[in-house]
Image (tube, rainbow, N blue to C red; front, side):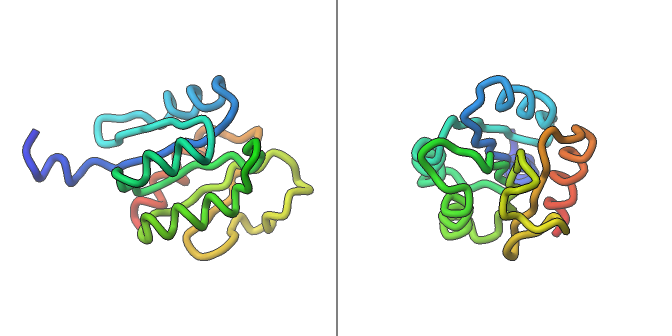
Amino acid sequence: MSETNKQDIYRLLIVDGDAAMRELLAGLLRAPNRSVEVRDGARTALEFLQHNPIDVAFVDAALTGASAQHLADRIKKLCPHAQVVICAGRLSQPWDSAGRTRKGERVLRQPFNFGEALELADSCKTE
């Protein structure tokens, strides 16, 4: 693969404790121009990010033993240009109804429309 082609690859990270959801989302988002990595928790995600930059992270709001907001903050520190999509399951979770949290973060409600997930991933790429 040429250097230009490597630079054209869009890098996504999915962090979710639910293996089925992780793989479902990864399968949906895989494409020739996308590299998709999956991790089951904050610790393994941060280990991956130490040596691998990303463009977008999809983070489960209900991570076991970790705050999704804390992980989002760490992702932004390690990859300042990255967009973070918080996948929130309950309307009572503290993510605003407009679908945005802090700068560079989005909210995707679960169960979510997979077309919306694709659209959100693509819109993050162009920002």
